[in-house]
Image: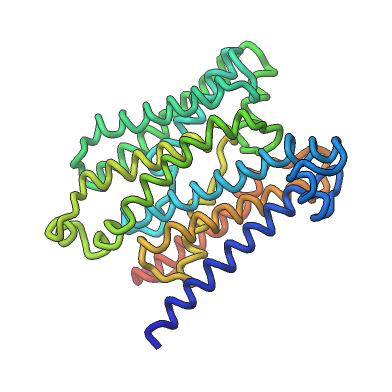
Amino acid sequence: MSHAPARRRTAAVVALALLVVVLALASLGIGPVRLSPLEVATALFGAGDEITQIIVRDIRLPRTVLALAVGGILGMSGAALQGLLRNPLASPSLFGAPQAAALGAVLVIVAGAADVRSWLLPAAAIAMAFVSVFALLAVAGRNAGLLILILAGLAISSLAGALTALAMNLSSNPFASLEVAFWLLGSLEDRSVRHVALALPFIAAGAMVLMSRRSAFRVLTLGEEAAESLGVDVGRLRLLVIMGVALGVGGAVAVTGTIAFIGLVAPHLMRPLVGHDPGRLLGPSALAGAALLTASDIAVRLIPSATNIKVGVLTAIIGVPFFLYLIVRERRALGGGVA
């Protein structure tokens, strides 16, 4: 009987991994030109006609890789922050890195230095994500309490949002403002191998930092004082988690714009399947995030519309009701009831 939970966790992870593979293949085949799985596989290995190879390898493959990587790091970051704060409502936007990354990209667009396909855009976004983290640590301090960290992150994200709106208001180019508005909605369209090459190292680095601390998350469930007594440097753990989230989410936002709620929803979907141990939750949450974003990106291509629906809009429509449900559930758990 003791092995049943472990077998169930393994089965859930394997099934989820297979789902991610299926969704990735579907993403490569779905679009204005529909391709069969055989045509997709043939094109991936450099066979078949030249047009199909261009569609699969040059247009759809970067988009699919980014959907998997961005969804994965958002899901893992959400699980890491929820484990760090021991709060199921925590998400990657808590510390202001996504908002600051968006600000960096917006400043480049409004200044006319680059469009959404330029390498300057993700470079500026990643730089601003780091600035936000360093500002957070400077304001709150390495050993600050969780409340101070949350308040500092809220202040930084609010400032980044206000500066983004100001940059759009001051822009003399209405087309630049329109481009910014659409970019902020979050999208995987028109992304190239160049975007993948720039974002993927940061996403991978952030994932490695977070995964390296998974055993500390398990100890932290006992409380900060107990974790300190067992040899966990909680201050250093906070620093590493924030740095990991900034690396991964900064690289993600740099090339996709703002995509909300993946980091909140993915860990909650996995807990009933793999348990509440935050150390075991990181990998499955990454798979769930990859599946959610890839499925959402497929959905926006299938929904009939006069213009292309942005994937960030769809994730927000799904995520907001889920977030409200979590708030109500937490209120009931605390004995507050419902009005």
